[in-house]
Amino acid sequence: MAEPGSNDTYHHGNLKETLMNNCLKMIEEKGVSGFTLREVARISGVSPAAPYHHFRNKTELLTAVSVMGFGMLDEAQRKASQQFDNPGDKLRSLGRSYVMFAVNHKVYFHVMFRANREPLWENEQVINAAKQALGHLENTIRELYPESEEGNDNHFKAAVLTCWSMVHGLASLWVDGPLRATEPGKLDIEELIDIILSQSMTHKNF
Image (cartoon, rainbow, N blue to C red; front, side, top):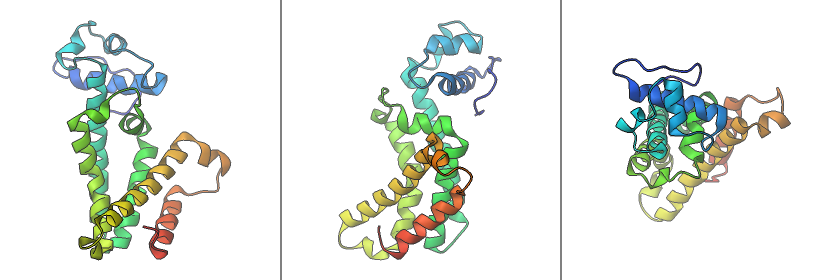
């Protein structure tokens, strides 16, 4: 799947991919709610009816983009997890991977987590793809705190949520601009996530 750029016009046999590529471009230009399926068809060089062979509506198109994004995140997290055996190192690697995914794939990140007016999180495909991608973080925290296998499961869930909130919040602050605007040229985002996660593990904040 291509990143947003010049319009992708339809060639025989790849209409679905063309529509998804141009959906990403429209989101980059107008936001999730700022375009229609008809516009995606127009810049794809097909008739207004053509997209309906693959997507019944705009929500289905956004769902496909979201699932694709979570698949990409899952692959990035899997590779990050495989780089280390030590769970602490693995967690820091996952944190860096998560944040850099958001930095390098801003439009996907936006659709995956911020399509607020679209009921994407009611879709089983999106939910399952998200669970798969986020499962690496959960598994690593389980390794980091093996005592969580027994006892208070709510404590384990809170630990996972706390860690996810840290990396997701940092990713959002960086992608949206406030962090870069307030600390221009002073921050290395990957070093920052290392420090935050290391401090949290040291002080057992999760």
